[in-house]
Amino acid sequence: MTTSIVKAYKILVNKHMTVYNAFQTGFLMAGGDFIAQTVVEKKSLESYDTVRTAKFFGIGLLFVGPTISAWYKFLDKKFTAQVRQLANKKTAVFKKVALDQLIFAPVFIAAIISVIDLSEGGEVRKIPCELGKKYPDILLANYKLWPWVQLVNFYFVPLKHQVLLVQSVAVLWNTYISFKTHEN
Image 1 (tube, one colour):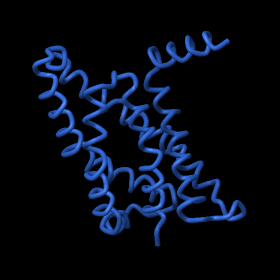
Image 2 (cartoon, one colour; image 1 turned 90 degrees about the vertical axis):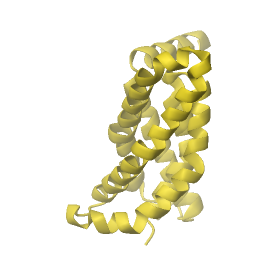
Image 3 (cartoon, helix red, strand yellow; image 1 turned 180 degrees about the vertical axis):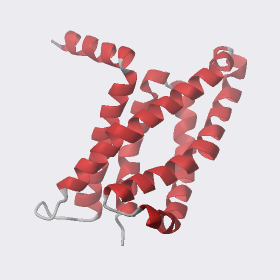
């Protein structure tokens, strides 16, 4: 039984990595929202917003998971030759982290804030205002956490498991994002 589960898992990860990452991200984003509502916001089960959690699942499934998967595949292809040469591996990892944090993260954070706001019924014309309120704090928090996570991720973790590592750490990050994007 356990062997067949492990075998099915390996097939899913190897043959359908983007789909796997999308579902995994959806569940972990929903988990982050659940923690935000029950632990951080201290909502009772009666006032718990299941629709909000479902939206976080959908955003993870349809947007975050596929986007991060594609980004990591791009980085992997761009730096594969350098990573194979052990002498250049550290340089390649630092370049990946630099691209991730200086190009991808600022754009992705703006996108995720916008997508969450729109999923909550926000208007496109009000997105710049929402970004002005939420973006600086979230970007600063990003720079305190994610460069370190990505150093470990890009140096030690194979491509097919990078989204899993990031999304495992991101349960707490998603809790923060959920809280910050729903803060009055």
